[in-house]
Length: 312
Length: 301
Image 1: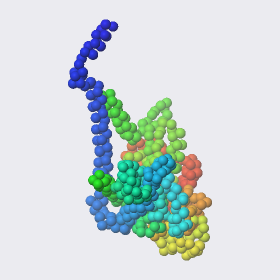
Image 2 (image 1 turned 90 degrees about the horizontal axis):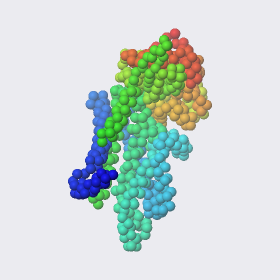
Image 3 (image 1 turned 60 degrees about the vertical axis):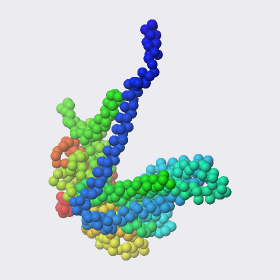
Image 4 (image 1 turned 30 degrees about the horizontal axis):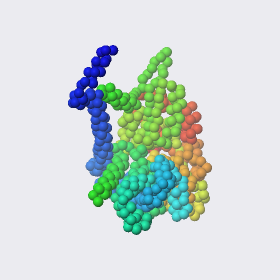
């Protein structure tokens, strides 16, 4: 008992400056542990990313390096693997056009909904639209595709003629799929505009619509564009839903009603049936490489837009 | 620090062993003088064969409790590659190994486990139920574009194909179209699975596609060719020419041989052939009165 008391006294007597000079080993350990954990995570992430990049690039470049297929051939529209012609241009264009069209349809809708949620009815509009967009995000793409196949395709067939499968069906399904991306990013951007800007505008006698169209939209344009580009990137990479409604014919995508193909749909259709190492299979890897490069382009585009926003 | 680190390391190590463990071979247990099979077996490949192989694996496992059979899809190309590189024990394929580029038929052993018959199917309201083979070729090569040219309704023909690399498509092109290339382009559709082909043919006016017998139902009509009805009995003696063997390929190196052989023997056994295979709509290989080799030569058994 007596010893305990003296111990306590001794501890109390040690000056604080001594304690601070030597941090407790326990705390040091925790610090080190935390550092190791974060370092390992980031290195693993980098490692995965780079091995993926190297793997896809080497696989995708192989048919060109070995001379099985020339660049000119690859970027032609002649697709007939049975006779060794592997032109992927119609698929590249198909992917591009279907995602750009989807973004064109989706952007005004998404930005409009975002304005409604932040400016016009911030309380109840948000209460309804926020969960609605969240649900849209949560629906798996196969469900979108199946609904497209059973509802959108017959609808187009009856209203516009043709088969129903094709660019139009793909655009409709994709524009619904990318809507939540555009809405949520637009909402974030609009909310980040400082309140005094709005109040200044009202103080000058501007109406609500004038404030929205001349001030808010202009200030937040880079952010809104980021949302649209992200949506487009998602549309570009989407495989399953698109493949179910687009018809998968190697046609050039210049007619809304004819069946076309995208890079992703051709890859998913043929990956399992072709033998690894065959030219057919390697060309699918080259298409994957094109997809990867396009995604990189989208990322660069977004970085560029946000940089401009910071500067302005 | 050390404790946590060891824990992390342990988890990583465990994950790796689990991954590696997937490829473990079979071991033979001898107990009480009776041979009991045990170990794991993987069968990868053709999605068309998957339902049969999966059902067979369930029955096989209930008879041999020590064996774990894993069945995966992935396509015939995947199946052949896995058998050749020995990444799976059995590679399922609906085409001969000789027909695929970059596959060395010398490295694998072919086991023909059952037969599948295929037939052209059309939307129920096209107005005909019989075509001559020449008419079928003309339709699929794009020469005939309207059903009235072959005696049906005045309606545009819509082709519903399988992907270029599909085994069903290869069989159809070889035996129904006599090797003629299918017409591609304006207005043709290409679908990933037979189920989708059936759905689209049933819903699209004027559509024609091709399916395995097992996919037939009332929503589409199966077309007769030159008056021959697409049914199992006509396949036995090659009266109906559009059929293909379903193959199980194994690697020649003999790894896991005992299990591979036991499983293939189980599928080719008369009970499975007359039971399971027939029940799922496929044709028992034991019923065939003719034989066909990789080059397409037909001999009477």
